[in-house]
Image (tube, rainbow, N blue to C red; front, side, top):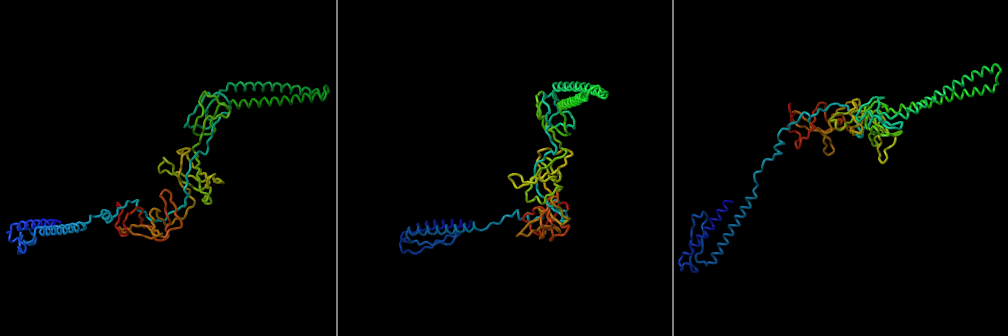
Length: 435
């Protein structure tokens, strides 16, 4: 580009210099038919340019324009060629990274080895206590005392609330008095019957008179029993005025406050037993033939991190849920430490079947190309590729993750790369950090 610019400058100087020389010629030599005058321009750095001193001014200007245009065209072509010349390519960071040895963490490499695989069924659902009850009042009256609040633990038989018993106590006292009166009437009837029996034996009274006395005695016995029964009923009502916990558990809700008036069957508190929980999960109807009572289940609950809870199928609903093709199964979950609470959401899996130990690799390590599965292995510091023949189905191995059975292509102990190796190919160098 610089050489082209110098050539253009030199041509312009030559043209200007030639014009000045022509103008200084004598008039008689500038006439038509005059001889040519060679004007060398040595300091312009270009070729000698010869002008016809005898040509007219218009012809000289036309020639100068054509020379300048030709020089500009040559310079433009040279510039265009220079711009099209490829520059030196910059180094590719991706290619440089790909050529560097791949460094793997210890968890990125897993050995192929025999494992017990289990076919599992994903499940999710809410957890609820198996035993829960709403404790209600059996009598009407004002709540005098309420001894519990939400979240408080109670033992079986502990007092939860007391209801005003003054009216019930008066009724119970009346029934006790009726019992005493009935007992006195019974004693009198018994005495008359015994006397009349003696008189009948001595022929002082008739058989009809004795039977009347015997009937009166029987009526007195019945009245006494009735009075006792009514007294027991009032005693039960009096005892029911003291509301007690029907089982050991935790107060989930309190529905009344001290001083409120309650009637029969009014709810007082809700009591739950958290030691045994129940997970209700919906299972597709097509999977129900594989579900059996007693099958183990494992699941996690939000907020507990990696802690895993276990249970087993306790019951299977005989009909599908209305509006769906799912069937509800009920999984009993022990909760001795009472960590799980009612209403929590659980996600896990139901173990349907287990196999004998078989050679397996992580599911995440298996790749596929044109429908052919393969894995990348690490051997002798380099990445290798192994084509596999897998088992019929994938399975899981609990908290370690999902694995698949390998029937051909690997041997026990070979190390399989689980991590993504990017654009590296088989034969690329690789190593495990720390080895």
